[in-house]
Each structure stands twice: as C-alpha cells, then as structure tokens.
Length: 322
Image (tube, rainbow, N blue to C red; front, side, top):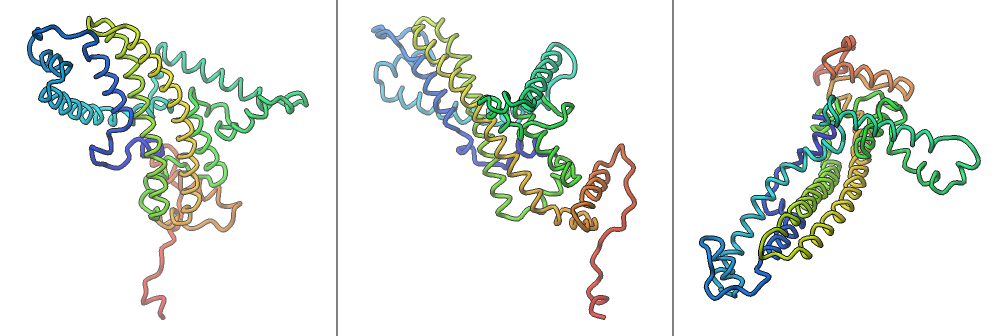
C-alpha cells in the first residue's frame, strides 16, 4: 500500500459521517425536481410510490413521513456507494488507474506532452520571462511538478504525488510508496491524526465531487418527465457542473496538503524507519542517500539485488550491564 492507496483507504467511520453535504444536496434536488410542479388531480392516478408522491404534494402527513424515511434511506445507502467510489476516483485522477492502451492512453500521452512543454516554458531563461506575471505564478507551482520529464503525469494530482516522491528520493534515497506501510506502523499519535485529517479532507471533497457530477448527470434526464419543467432541471445541471469544477480544483489543493503532510511525516520519522527495519542509521547527510537507496532496494523485494547489510540490533540487557 503506497501513499495514494493509504489516502484512498482511510479508516472505517460511522455511516452517518459518510453522508456528506453533497448527499443532502443531491437528495434535495431530486425531491424538488420530482415534486408535482402542476396541481395534482382530484384522484391520484397510478399506484405505489406514485400515490405517495401525489399525496405528499397534497400535504398528506403520512405520505410526507414516508417520503422522509425513503429520503434518509436513499441518502444513507447512496452515501456508502459514493464513499466506496471516492478512493478509485482519487486513483483515477492521480493517473494510477489509466489504461496503457487505447484512446484513453493516447489522450493521456498527449496530456503529458502538453504539461511537459508547459513546464519547460515556465523554466525558460530570459528577462522577459522573469517579469511575466503568469510565468512568476507558474514558477510557484513548479514545486508541485516533478523535475524529471519521465515522472510527469496527465493530471495535477498525479504530478503532486510524483513531485513529493521525487523530492524524498532525491534527498534521502527512500521510495515513499515502498516505505509507507512500514512508516504507518511507527507514526506517533500527532502525526497520525494530522494525516487522517488531511486524508479526510481529500476524501470528503472527492465524495462531494461525485455528488455534484451525479446532480449534473441526472438533472437533465428528469426534464423529460411530464411533471418536471425543463428550466429547473437545466439550472440544477448547470449548478452541479459549476460546483463539480470548483470541487475538482479544491481536490487538487487538498492533495497538495496531503502530500506535504506525508512528506513531513517521513522526514520526521525516517530515523525511526531505519530502526524499525533493523537498518543502520546513516552517518551524515552525504551517506543518507546511499543508505536510503539500499533500504529501498531491500523493501522492493524484486528487481534489484538486496544489499548485504549488518542489521543494527541493540545488545541484550545483561551484556550491556557487564
């Protein structure tokens, strides 16, 4: 489980916590669009749920209570489904779940080429580029992009994770994704709580993003129903699409904060990481990169030949007393 997988998994929570604001908004829009926009007939036609909706539109208390219960059940059940989709959505937006062949893969390669070309323009020398306000703002975002072109991904979220992993490997020789399962076992409580808060912010925005997209996708088909006017459904679809765009940008900001928190946690606990693996601590910053690369090769288990290193184990207590 790497950094992205740990973000996508999270900890088990009560089902009531998983009902985000997007679930309530989606349910409210669906109820408003499905309510009778025209005065109901004297006798409600149809059967089953149609009668309940018709009676609720006429102000029948029992029908209103039944619709309320159905709304709560629908919001709870659908929230569990959306929560299960939040993790795969983060993987998809990070570029880790994209196919390697087909039209989507070709589109991803073109996207990578454009992002790489844009990065080169931002880092171009020249006095005119240094004074360009757009170039100045873009250089501030270079920390969120990997230096190596081969590590560039099709998305901003993927670049944020790639840049964080590149910095950790460049400074300490450690692979953040390979070291993450071991690191999670040695984190202290403050660091663990901070990571959980950063993870929940990302997953909460991912859930609301799915709800906004569902609102935009389902609002327009509802306009085809007889009792729903077209204008409210179109407005709901436009608002849902606009909110989805805002949430997508907010999701990228949340991932940036999560990547910074994960990087700081690894930086703070890297000595404990060596100790937990029984690995000798590096003597100085110059030797740290080589030592971290050896530990990474050891944790990889495949590919590179594991190095022969004498484990740094503490002596038994009776030997130290002598």
